[in-house]
Length: 264
Image (cartoon, rainbow, N blue to C red):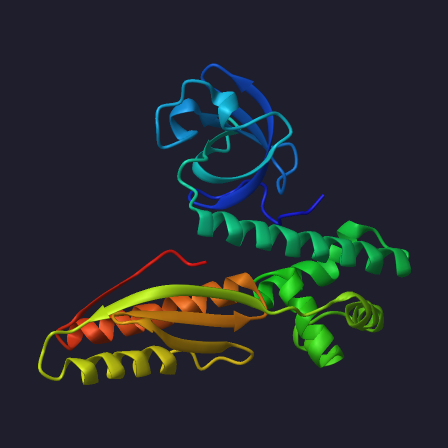
């Protein structure tokens, strides 16, 4: 089981779930990242349209990405939403889930080689990597690229280092994630073309980050495609959002207007 350090999810967090039961008032989902935790997706949170039959939208044993609406830890009650999860949010969470599964498998291998429990591997290696890099698998990717120096900087004890480096080098493959969005930019001032060019330059300059490639191409006036490559979805989404925001802010300051479509 993929583990989370905390016992309960936080409100507004997106989590992986498995549908366990369907009733007339909603569907229940076990939370895959939180041991023995279950939440309710009320019928009003199943879909944005009127729901006549819940089974049209979900089925038992189905994996779903849900948004946490409310958490009552004392009563162990968790309210969830399916309809408030966009396609982009779903892709993001599924990518994060797959990466956390890979990290969990690697920590299990580390534990077996060192005759430790997986809990000990999480405490000694997993949680320190998550604290430093935001997620455990991102830490393994850094180790794959830069070796034991990464572990030393994360404060990981020497007895773990050689095994972790060896397994990261053998099992981690860094694949580029690609995202793109279409941005529409308009400016009807006499110098509108220059305003648009300046806005695009500001968007490109906002993304000076290692291992990230951003390209902007004209699709057909006034539409521009922003395409980004990064090592993971979270970084790609964050940097792409930053570039688009910087571009739109710049064109609005110059007297123009801009908006963007959903990321693909």
